[in-house]
Image 1 (cartoon, rainbow, N blue to C red):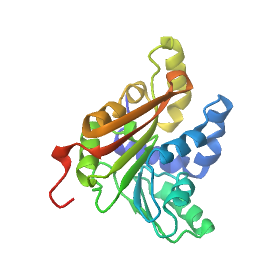
Image 2 (image 1 turned 90 degrees about the vertical axis):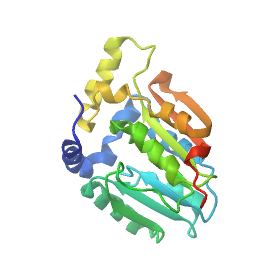
Image 3 (image 1 turned 180 degrees about the vertical axis):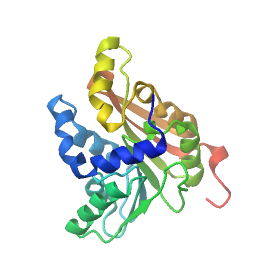
Image 4 (image 1 turned 120 degrees about the vertical axis):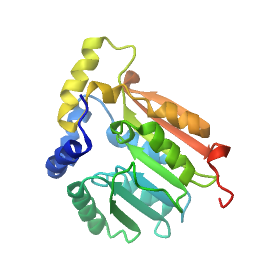
Length: 223
């Protein structure tokens, strides 16, 4: 059974000091997490000076890649449910000397996108049971040229059931359960954006997808 919101926050509050170092586990199994993050950022086609929201930003591992794209004149907004994760992100921002990063402690399901050109989510959207509604709200908050990119792990359809269950078992400390890896936020992105691309990774256990231009019914006359 998936963790509820408070259980999830408490889990990541405990993980925060060790989160970055713990990624060695994925690398040991050949999952190129850092590379996949960079791929997701690249799919946003960010321009210097643009504003990007990093939903579920965690410890800020995406900020370096985002800053390389938007530059010092751009703006990065990192949103995360867990203050302890944001504390690690804040130290990362201070060490790098980035003056254009804003950190927001908020539930991504209630945070409203506005004045942003693009939204990034890495290992975040599938943690939300109401991801369909969330992605619809993202699309509504973006302008006509808005983009979204998402990197996720998922249950590989062609893997033996026992192997998928083993993957869930090893990821349980990070709050991963079998129902989470069966969620398909990529399909929701496809439904709410005019253009869509998706690339399967690691034999189907992960993917990076992107959507451009929210579908017409999401765009207000003010956009």
